[in-house]
Amino acid sequence: GENVEQHPSTLSVQEGDSAVIKCTYSDSASNYFPWYKQELGKGPQLIIDIRSNVGEKKDQRIAVTLNKTAKHFSLHITETQPEDSAVYFCAASDYKLSFGAGTTVTVRA
Amino acid sequence: GAVVSQHPSWVICKSGTSVKIECRSLDFQATTMFWYRQFPKQSLMLMATSNEGSKATYEQGVEKDKFLINHASLTLSTLTVTSAHPEDSSFYICSATERGSTYEQYFGPGTRLTVT
Image (cartoon, rainbow over all chains, first blue to last red; front, top):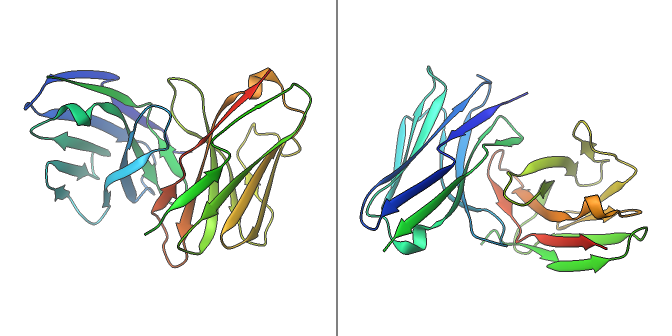
Protein backbone atom coordinates (compact mmCIF):
# COMPACT_ATOMS: atom_id res chain seq x y z
CA GLY A 1 0.00 0.00 0.00
CA GLU A 2 0.86 3.66 -0.16
CA ASN A 3 3.17 5.12 2.49
CA VAL A 4 3.28 8.89 2.95
CA GLU A 5 5.94 10.53 5.10
CA GLN A 6 5.57 14.15 6.21
CA HIS A 7 8.11 16.53 7.71
CA PRO A 8 8.48 18.40 9.95
CA SER A 9 6.06 17.25 12.65
CA THR A 10 6.00 20.73 14.19
CA LEU A 11 6.79 24.11 12.69
CA SER A 12 6.88 27.48 14.42
CA VAL A 13 7.19 30.60 12.30
CA GLN A 14 7.04 34.33 12.87
CA GLU A 15 4.01 36.07 11.44
CA GLY A 16 4.79 37.20 7.90
CA ASP A 17 7.42 34.52 7.30
CA SER A 18 6.98 31.51 5.02
CA ALA A 19 6.22 27.92 6.04
CA VAL A 20 7.22 24.86 4.07
CA ILE A 21 6.03 21.30 4.66
CA LYS A 22 7.41 18.36 2.69
CA CYS A 23 5.97 14.94 1.92
CA THR A 24 7.21 11.85 0.15
CA TYR A 25 5.15 8.94 -1.15
CA SER A 26 5.98 5.41 -2.21
CA ASP A 27 3.40 4.27 -4.76
CA SER A 28 4.06 5.50 -8.28
CA ALA A 29 0.39 4.83 -9.10
CA SER A 30 -0.68 7.76 -6.89
CA ASN A 31 -1.80 10.65 -9.06
CA TYR A 32 -3.69 13.03 -6.77
CA PHE A 33 -2.05 14.95 -3.94
CA PRO A 34 -4.26 17.08 -1.69
CA TRP A 35 -3.36 19.14 1.35
CA TYR A 36 -5.72 19.56 4.29
CA LYS A 37 -5.89 21.98 7.19
CA GLN A 38 -7.45 20.68 10.39
CA GLU A 39 -8.37 22.83 13.34
CA LEU A 40 -8.93 21.35 16.78
CA GLY A 41 -12.11 19.30 16.99
CA LYS A 42 -13.01 19.79 13.33
CA GLY A 43 -12.83 17.77 10.15
CA PRO A 44 -10.06 18.33 7.61
CA GLN A 45 -10.52 21.15 5.12
CA LEU A 46 -9.05 20.91 1.63
CA ILE A 47 -6.78 23.91 1.02
CA ILE A 48 -5.11 22.97 -2.24
CA ASP A 49 -4.53 19.92 -4.40
CA ILE A 50 -2.44 18.94 -7.38
CA ARG A 51 -2.71 16.21 -9.98
CA SER A 52 0.18 14.24 -11.35
CA ASN A 53 0.21 15.99 -14.71
CA VAL A 54 0.99 19.34 -13.06
CA GLY A 55 4.24 20.41 -11.42
CA GLU A 56 3.08 23.44 -9.50
CA LYS A 57 -0.14 25.10 -8.43
CA LYS A 58 -0.74 28.35 -6.58
CA ASP A 59 -3.74 29.85 -4.83
CA GLN A 60 -3.08 33.24 -3.27
CA ARG A 61 -0.64 32.65 -0.38
CA ILE A 62 -0.59 28.88 -0.80
CA ALA A 63 1.38 26.89 -3.36
CA VAL A 64 2.10 23.22 -3.91
CA THR A 65 4.91 21.66 -5.94
CA LEU A 66 5.13 18.08 -7.15
CA ASN A 67 8.15 16.10 -8.31
CA LYS A 68 6.85 12.78 -9.60
CA THR A 69 10.28 11.45 -10.44
CA ALA A 70 11.47 11.91 -6.87
CA LYS A 71 8.01 11.11 -5.43
CA HIS A 72 7.82 14.17 -3.27
CA PHE A 73 5.54 17.18 -2.96
CA SER A 74 5.60 20.29 -0.84
CA LEU A 75 3.26 22.92 0.58
CA HIS A 76 4.40 26.53 0.74
CA ILE A 77 2.53 29.16 2.74
CA THR A 78 3.76 32.72 2.31
CA GLU A 79 3.07 35.76 4.50
CA THR A 80 1.82 33.57 7.32
CA GLN A 81 -0.90 34.88 9.62
CA PRO A 82 -2.01 33.73 13.09
CA GLU A 83 -5.10 32.11 11.56
CA ASP A 84 -2.81 29.80 9.60
CA SER A 85 -2.03 28.03 12.89
CA ALA A 86 -3.43 24.49 12.61
CA VAL A 87 -2.45 20.92 11.79
CA TYR A 88 -1.72 20.34 8.12
CA PHE A 89 -1.90 16.93 6.45
CA CYS A 90 -0.63 15.88 3.06
CA ALA A 91 -2.15 12.89 1.30
CA ALA A 92 -1.59 10.78 -1.79
CA SER A 93 -4.24 8.93 -3.72
CA ASP A 94 -4.90 6.70 -6.66
CA TYR A 95 -8.46 6.29 -5.32
CA LYS A 96 -8.12 5.98 -1.57
CA LEU A 97 -6.35 8.67 0.41
CA SER A 98 -3.24 7.83 2.40
CA PHE A 99 -2.37 10.58 4.86
CA GLY A 100 0.90 11.82 6.22
CA ALA A 101 1.36 12.07 9.98
CA GLY A 102 0.59 15.78 10.08
CA THR A 103 2.47 19.00 10.81
CA THR A 104 1.44 21.30 13.65
CA VAL A 105 2.03 24.85 12.46
CA THR A 106 2.19 27.68 14.97
CA VAL A 107 2.38 31.25 13.71
CA ARG A 108 3.81 33.60 16.34
CA ALA A 109 2.36 37.10 16.36
CA GLY B 1 -21.39 23.69 -2.45
CA ALA B 2 -20.09 20.16 -1.61
CA VAL B 3 -21.09 20.15 2.05
CA VAL B 4 -20.96 17.01 4.16
CA SER B 5 -22.64 16.85 7.56
CA GLN B 6 -22.35 14.36 10.40
CA HIS B 7 -24.71 13.63 13.24
CA PRO B 8 -24.23 13.64 16.11
CA SER B 9 -21.22 15.90 16.55
CA TRP B 10 -20.42 14.18 19.82
CA VAL B 11 -21.83 11.20 21.69
CA ILE B 12 -21.18 9.47 24.98
CA CYS B 13 -22.28 5.87 25.41
CA LYS B 14 -21.81 3.12 27.92
CA SER B 15 -19.58 0.13 27.30
CA GLY B 16 -21.46 -2.69 25.58
CA THR B 17 -24.01 -0.50 23.83
CA SER B 18 -24.20 0.42 20.14
CA VAL B 19 -24.08 3.86 18.62
CA LYS B 20 -24.95 5.06 15.12
CA ILE B 21 -23.26 7.94 13.31
CA GLU B 22 -24.82 9.48 10.20
CA CYS B 23 -22.98 11.07 7.30
CA ARG B 24 -24.92 13.11 4.74
CA SER B 25 -23.96 14.88 1.55
CA LEU B 26 -26.19 17.96 1.61
CA ASP B 27 -25.94 19.36 -1.89
CA PHE B 28 -24.55 16.61 -4.08
CA GLN B 29 -24.91 12.93 -4.78
CA ALA B 30 -22.13 10.87 -3.24
CA THR B 31 -21.35 7.70 -5.11
CA THR B 32 -18.63 6.79 -2.64
CA MET B 33 -18.30 7.55 1.04
CA PHE B 34 -15.29 6.88 3.24
CA TRP B 35 -15.07 6.44 7.01
CA TYR B 36 -11.95 7.42 8.93
CA ARG B 37 -10.91 7.18 12.55
CA GLN B 38 -8.54 9.65 14.18
CA PHE B 39 -7.00 9.21 17.62
CA PRO B 40 -5.70 12.27 19.51
CA LYS B 41 -2.63 13.86 17.92
CA GLN B 42 -2.60 11.24 15.17
CA SER B 43 -3.43 11.15 11.50
CA LEU B 44 -6.60 9.93 9.81
CA MET B 45 -6.81 6.18 9.27
CA LEU B 46 -9.19 4.84 6.64
CA MET B 47 -11.60 2.30 8.07
CA ALA B 48 -13.80 1.47 5.11
CA THR B 49 -15.08 2.54 1.73
CA SER B 50 -18.75 2.30 0.83
CA ASN B 51 -20.53 2.63 -2.47
CA GLU B 52 -24.25 3.25 -2.69
CA GLY B 53 -26.15 -0.01 -2.76
CA SER B 54 -23.06 -2.16 -2.22
CA LYS B 55 -21.39 -3.75 0.76
CA ALA B 56 -18.61 -1.72 2.32
CA THR B 57 -14.97 -2.62 1.77
CA TYR B 58 -13.05 -2.66 5.03
CA GLU B 59 -9.38 -1.94 5.50
CA GLN B 60 -7.14 -4.61 6.95
CA GLY B 61 -7.50 -4.85 10.69
CA VAL B 62 -10.94 -3.24 10.86
CA GLU B 63 -13.63 -5.60 12.21
CA LYS B 64 -16.58 -5.53 9.86
CA ASP B 65 -18.90 -7.05 12.46
CA LYS B 66 -18.02 -4.34 14.93
CA PHE B 67 -18.18 -1.35 12.59
CA LEU B 68 -21.32 -1.77 10.49
CA ILE B 69 -21.57 0.52 7.49
CA ASN B 70 -24.69 1.10 5.47
CA HIS B 71 -24.82 3.29 2.35
CA ALA B 72 -28.51 3.08 1.51
CA SER B 73 -28.80 6.18 -0.64
CA LEU B 74 -26.67 8.58 -2.63
CA THR B 75 -26.76 11.10 0.21
CA LEU B 76 -26.58 9.02 3.37
CA SER B 77 -24.12 6.58 4.92
CA THR B 78 -24.22 5.33 8.49
CA LEU B 79 -21.56 3.84 10.74
CA THR B 80 -22.75 1.76 13.68
CA VAL B 81 -20.24 0.90 16.37
CA THR B 82 -21.58 -2.27 17.99
CA SER B 83 -20.81 -3.41 21.52
CA ALA B 84 -18.67 -0.35 22.05
CA HIS B 85 -15.66 -0.47 24.37
CA PRO B 86 -13.54 2.37 25.79
CA GLU B 87 -10.84 1.68 23.19
CA ASP B 88 -13.37 2.59 20.48
CA SER B 89 -13.39 6.16 21.81
CA SER B 90 -12.12 8.28 18.95
CA PHE B 91 -12.94 10.98 16.42
CA TYR B 92 -14.84 9.46 13.48
CA ILE B 93 -14.84 11.39 10.22
CA CYS B 94 -16.63 10.65 6.98
CA SER B 95 -15.94 11.95 3.50
CA ALA B 96 -17.77 11.74 0.22
CA THR B 97 -16.88 11.78 -3.45
CA GLU B 98 -19.26 13.47 -5.81
CA ARG B 99 -20.76 11.57 -8.73
CA GLY B 100 -18.52 12.05 -11.75
CA SER B 101 -15.46 12.92 -9.66
CA THR B 102 -12.68 10.45 -9.10
CA TYR B 103 -10.43 12.04 -6.55
CA GLU B 104 -11.66 14.93 -4.48
CA GLN B 105 -13.15 13.97 -1.14
CA TYR B 106 -15.29 16.35 0.87
CA PHE B 107 -14.98 15.80 4.60
CA GLY B 108 -17.59 16.05 7.32
CA PRO B 109 -16.99 17.85 10.62
CA GLY B 110 -16.41 14.64 12.55
CA THR B 111 -18.10 12.87 15.46
CA ARG B 112 -16.42 12.57 18.84
CA LEU B 113 -17.31 9.22 20.43
CA THR B 114 -16.58 8.61 24.09
CA VAL B 115 -17.29 5.17 25.53
CA THR B 116 -17.47 5.04 29.33
